[in-house]
Each structure stands twice: as structure tokens, then as C-alpha cells.
Length: 324
Ligand code: ATP
Image (cartoon, rainbow, N blue to C red; front, side, top):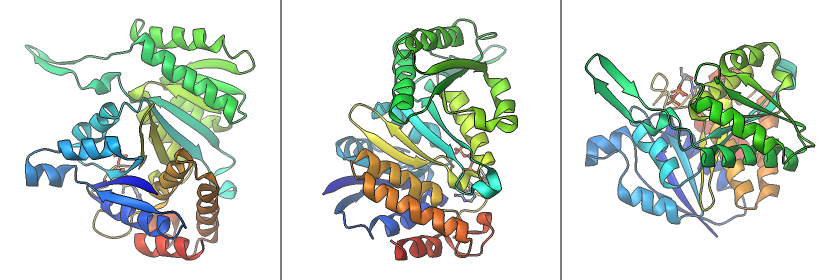
């Protein structure tokens, strides 16, 4: 039995998490769910966006399934990643419809604990300032993770993304650390690009990428761009992994423009749950669910409007569950 902390959060987070539980409940695995609150509505109701109880239960769980946070995202998901010390955010950009999007398949390995996302901002006399923190230790850890990931998944290349020509000290440290770590992996090709060039190459040469390792902000932006390459934000899952905790969430946010309409694509969250199953050692079930999700998407019959169908979030999830 696995103890799962479930934090649906705001907007479509609630809808896609409910849909994902419909799928998980079809598997012959016993899950003990603890439903926890966090996010905008939680802040309105109880004064804090991320209650201590939510943090404590999340830390004690075997894994956390998270939906989305709205305006309070910095206080909820960014903080949760730091509290759980999930130093890596894995964001697979994989085309599930090769006929439409080609064979795009790369992994973004995003550093999850520092960079501008430490939220150290202040007002000054003439405006405002934000501090960007890059440490050697965190850079070593994330770069090493990326190379190990490449070895474990039979990839041949890791690309570091930074802006070291302008941010010479911070991004310079990240780039230099990357090439130091690369020496330990002589069989894996190591190259690097500036983040602005990467934004273009992802459009012009997406098949050239295998594993991208980058800092927090660039990883956030490039993964939304990656989503655009393979069918939109409804398609990309993510795993936040640390030494003691795993938190799984779709790359998308709370999508207030479609929240409450029952039309959000549940695939990103269902695939996040597959990453959770892998983390829990239940990889056979993860592959089974993935296979059915791919079938259902390519059948294009019972899918949500962003995939060209007219099914609701829950209808699509029930259809996936029915095929398991
Ligand atoms: P955040 O900064 O909080 O991560 P975001 O930039 O990823 O948020 P979203 O709130 O996810 O932004 O939404 C961006 C756009 O993508 C919205 O117009 C939304 O409708 C669409 N979108 C996001 N998730 C889904 C989904 N699961 N299904 C369909 N459309 C989605």
C-alpha cells in the first residue's frame, strides 16, 4: 500500500487530479490518499496558501500528486519543492502523435531549488531588484543527475542551457560546473547553448535534443515551449524528485480561462501519475497506463477539445480507465 498526499489546488488542478484518481483507482494497487489543501482558495479560507499540515503530510507520504496553484504558485508549488528538497524537475517533451508532431523526444532536467525562483525581491529607491542564486553544489547535483539520466535511458548527449555571455558569474558557474561534471561521463556528448538560441533551435531542430539541463527559470520557460511542440500544455507531465520525496504534477498551471468548464485535458496529470508509479517501483503499470493514453489520443474519439474532440475531462479519464 502506498500513502499518497493529494493536493488538487486551484482551477483545473481540481479537475485533472480527480480525473487522474479515476485512472489510478482502476489499477490493482492499493493507494491510501490523504487529500490536502493549498492554493488561492485555501489562502482565502484559512489565511495561508500552504498550511503546515499540508507540508508535514506531504513530507511523510510515499509520493505527492499535485494539480495546480493559481496566483499563489510561488507560495505553494515553488515552496513545496524547496520544503521537500526535490532538487530536480524532470519534464519529458515527447510527441505522442508522431504523425502530427514528428518524433520529438527529449527530457528537460530543470534545477528546482534556486536561481531567481528563490523569490528574493525587494523594492529600491528607483524600482525593484531580484537576486539570482546559483551554487556550485546544486549545479553539480543537477548536472550529475542529467548525465546519469542520459546513461540510464541510453541517450547519447546532454545539452546545458544558460546565458553565461551576459550573466558571467552566475550562469558562468553553472556552465563551468556542467563541463567539469561532463568529464566523468566520457561516453556522453556534452554541449551547451545560450537560452535564447535554444528557444529558436527547439523550433527549428527539435530532434537534435536528447537531454537538456538548465536552471530553474529557463527550465520553466523552455518546458512550456516544449509543450507547444507536441500538442500543448495539456500533454506534458513532470516529476519533482529529491533524496527523500517525490512530487508529481502537470507542467501546466491552473488555467483560469477554462477552469470549471470540465474541458481541461487530463493527460499531463495522468502521465505525471505514471512518473509517480515509476518512482514507486510500479513501472509495469506505468507503461500500461501510458500505452492506453497514447491509444486514446491517437484514436481521437473520446478526447478533450484541445485535442480536437468534445469529451469532458472526466469522460476522457473514464474512457482511459475503461481500457485498462
Ligand atoms: P503557470 O505559470 O501557473 O505554470 P502556465 O503559464 O503554465 O501557468 P496555464 O495556466 O497552464 O499557464 O495555461 C496556459 C494556457 O494553456 C491557457 O490558455 C490554458 O487554457 C491552456 N491549458 C493549460 N493547461 C491545459 C489543459 N490541461 N488542457 C487544456 N488547455 C490547457
